Image 1 (spheres, rainbow, N blue to C red):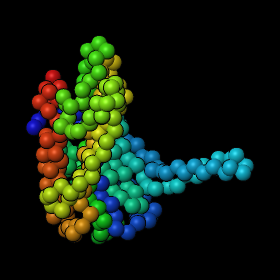
Image 2: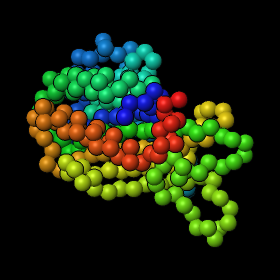
Image 3: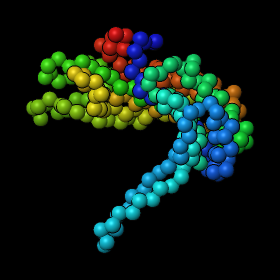
Image 4: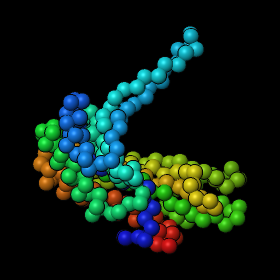
Length: 242
């Protein structure tokens, strides 16, 4: 369903490679699309190790790829040694804008890297549901999400925070679902917030042709919409249309 104020904080298309790519290929792909993005930064992983005998902490930084982003940092493209990642931060402009940008970037990658066998195809949407507070009354998550978040009544006091994750087959297109939800710090004064993170992916029988790849991604996005609507209540939907 289209909403006036969708709760999406980030939309992500991730294609994980079956074999690692090399730095020269990543840099070639980044050069070919660089003019379409304002910023370019290294995508790095930081590893911390602590030596108990010397009480010293060692920091190691490993180059993982290149991160490109728009002037407002909302459109993000990452070429990694292990994956292609295209994402859009809020405000989300819709699938009609996001999907063509990702497909174009993938075409640029393929022209630089050549045929790229995949190990995983995923579409992930991270949502933040903001609920206005009424005094000191705790928010009942069950009023907004169709998820089991109850704690034992014998504990007495009401639940003030929660974290949960569900991993299960989706029952369509050989896909699986990772659903993660929990309370998060609200950036809005006078609101409580909780996340609904939906990651739908396929890791077997992956398409080789790009037309089949994007047809599958389109279907995964449809599955995501179905899962999202099954997770939220009418009270939550009313928030998205305010």
